[in-house]
Structures are given as C-alpha cells and as structure tokens.
Image (tube, rainbow, N blue to C red):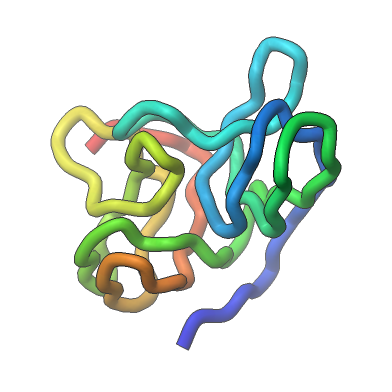
Length: 121
C-alpha cells in the first residue's frame, strides 16, 4: 500500500503541464517540468498536477514519496526516471533517484525512498 512519510516539500511554478507523482526538474527559469530524459537527474517529485505553464504545484524533495511506475519494479530496486517522469528500474549509467519500498506494475502508484545523492547505477 502506497504512503508518504517524512516528506519535505516546496511549492513552485510550472513551466509546462505536469502530471501528479512524476519526477520533475527545474528549467533555467526555475519552473517545474517532467524529467525528459531516461535515467537523468531529477529535482523532486510532483505532488499535484497542472494543466499548463504558470500554475503552482508542490514538489517533494526528500522523504518517502509517491511515484507512478512505468514498468515492473521489484521491492528494494533502485529506480530512475523515464522520459515522461515515471519511475522505472535503474540500469547501468542511470542516475538513481530512489529505492522502491514495494513492488509495482506499470501505471501503479508506489512509495519510494527519494534519494538526493543521485549516484549512477
């Protein structure tokens, strides 16, 4: 069962439409967008959604947070972002963004322990 715990958040303005529970990055203007590259670094996870540019959403940057899985993930696996900001199992060369606290199938919202160190797998 997915849950949040010890979560640290901040609010930001969006630079594009953002879906809930996705890995996000900040653009050059400090606006929130989905992580757009498989295995890339992320700045946090969106806790809400927005229809477009200029809306305010909360972003989690620490703690146990909810993310949407884009494929099968085993409990305890290192996760990274796909090109749509969804969680996938990390492979060699990917930046690790967290550890899955439960198993997942594609489309499922799961809890991860968000990591800020971003070491490559």
